[in-house]
Image (cartoon, rainbow, N blue to C red):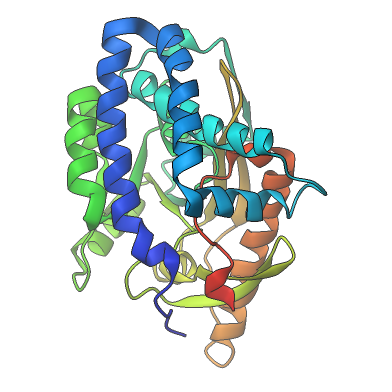
Length: 306
């Protein structure tokens, strides 16, 4: 089914452009004052944002209320601060400054190492849960290269930032161009060459095919594009997340999601896609409950499912 306009689609372009501008600002701060001082500066900035951005504040409260019996102002503040701290860490990670991070747990990382060693292509299904950049950079440090598929609306700005901070990662960003098959052909090239391609499965884009699933107790709409792509490519899919768990620690999780070639039955394709999206939602829910403050979708995520 075709997705109707929803808050995520409308918010996507503005949010990602703001993220790029914010990263540039954080980069200048870190160059001038270092990580410790910049982390301290984030606290009043986040407090101001929390006080002045009612829609994002309400979205945070609505999400947290699905996980906690009582949501306080302090919890919402911690949620926003986690997001800001992860954004700050991106500037260090993209510069390869891993010395700021004492340890990184890589639970399931052996899956990606095996795929790389065997030169087997795969899709890596992530979410706006934790840090995609942490996952990519930390994987790169262990000789596992990850390409990423992103929307054109923010890819050019984000690529410009990447080029200034990490030129190699910038070269592995694939831009989705609406109405063009060029990006999909590029993904096929990479998969056929035995490379890994990451994409996010929790946010709607332009003209996405979607389905409604149960997520944290209410209906929500998710794209089915990742599973259609996996079926076309005939490659395995792994769920991959980099969760922020302390000021110096990111926990990397990787688990098989679709092993082998995905075949969608012609007669019940919609039902099969819905089942895959529901399984993805169930795994997201698992990780949200494990690390609630890593959820970085600050809009009414459930409105699209109504």
